[in-house]
Length: 205
Image 1 (tube, rainbow, N blue to C red):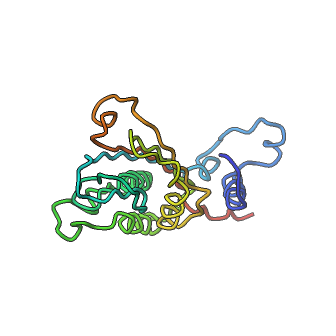
Image 2: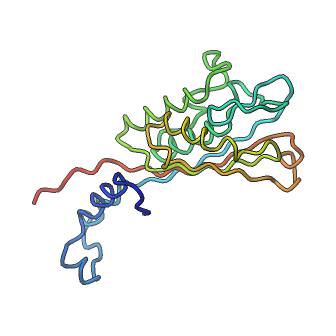
Image 3: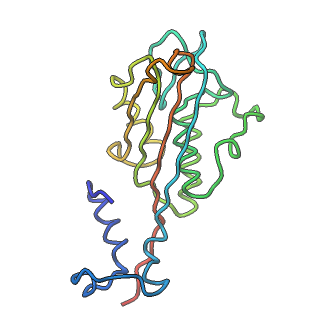
């Protein structure tokens, strides 16, 4: 794992707590029992994807940020593809289902829902299952508008919803080089990957 913040360092120390010191120094460590690999059992990776059509008369909301544009995304909720992809990624990593199971588009309760709030609910579900979000990486695919001017604001909103530092959230924008519905400016898509870790109790000496 990449160590960037003090939080990352503390997590790395927990993960390595099961490695025998002398074996680690010699570089000869290998798992000899289930207990030896137990610290690594708490690491989970999930991925998410979402796509919505662009239509006139709707606000364009990405990552909880309203972006000036002549079209917006069509959906049962506010159709925020970033929040939807991240929601699926963290729920998937925790083995907790997907966005459709928790917030079905057949339920009027979620009509025009704020997807950032739905992401916060999903994060609470993941936390209740004993997981912490380590980092999230998002790729937004849109021919227009440009995402770069809004990336920092999006990172901050997403981080706030999932309870981590903005440095733990990456948001990148890509075009589709004019290919298919996204490249034609008819839709926007997002892919997300999330890394979660379960709290690992300290071993007795």
